[in-house]
Image (cartoon, rainbow, N blue to C red; front, side):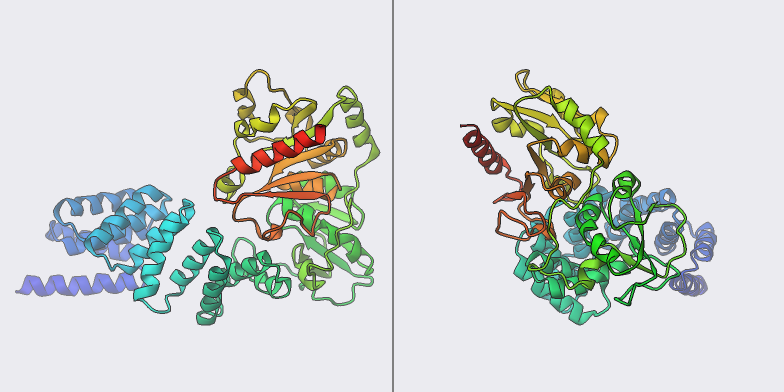
Length: 483
């Protein structure tokens, strides 16, 4: 009886240490107790949990697996799943969460966790089933509401997504995930006024938030002031929103522009910028700062007033002359190609293509094709039939100003949704952009045109993952062009 009381007291003390997040002390006490009673599972599970929190992953996994040999308990599978999740071992984690649900079908957190994994694996329909289970049985579970909204968005059911995001922000007004998702959906549907406001919540994300000494510009007079404008997110976003900088310059400010290193040379040549700083470099003293995409909100940008005069990028004549000379050897219709983006992009599985799937138009006569592809998926050029000729320009395209100068001498660019689409559009070149069934917000819905780029034509998927009709349409238009 005395031993039982001592064990109970020890468990209470260890549990208290875990609640206080004093994981090292909890682990030491567990080891002390297990030296006395080696088979006590209550101490073992707490030791595994403490080791997990101390990032002693191998030790924690060993204990959980030993316990599972004796006890088929849902808590063990769930904790082991969380351990794998923190190590980004999603498949192992998913198996553990599903086993948890076999043993305890109403386990809310297991439903939530497996749904989040399915979302990252681009399986929104499967994820939705788990989120909807939570929403049915646990009212006002914000994470599940937001998760279900994201799934509906990924399935192209935007109105349902908006309704859920609205509910989510009502229940948890400071949830920046829900606000940001809500903003993206509003922008997708063309509601820019409310959309910019909600999308501004993205800066509460730790990876986007900047702690700068100068205040953020809110529209104050810029006469005689120095304004830091800093690029955010991808290169395509930067190219798209460079259009606002000449107008900022007319307000009397000295413009310091911080951009991605690979865009430095291109940005250096643009009007409206006084000083260009590559990301990672020391910033000069400025009076105000503003994120680049926030300029759209501050100027109350809507579908009717987007500054879309093209070209709005300047390319030095020395660069264009080089490419003019190169292309003088090619007398046919000249088409640049980009079939895939960076595989690390969160939506690359949906936006990128396989080059071999483009054969219906790559086999057309009277066209010279050129690969503008950089770094990624260049090996696909080797998988084409011998009769398909595509000139690989990879070694000639050192940065974006090279690519821009090259595009300026082409007749057409055909590309998936990457930065090259923005580059061609900003240069005022004809560009055909392949858009996945669920588009990025800027391409909106149900139109072949975009208010951002007058020379761009959008070719949209009608079904998730099905590029064949899109490619056949492009081939048909190219044939008609050459007839």
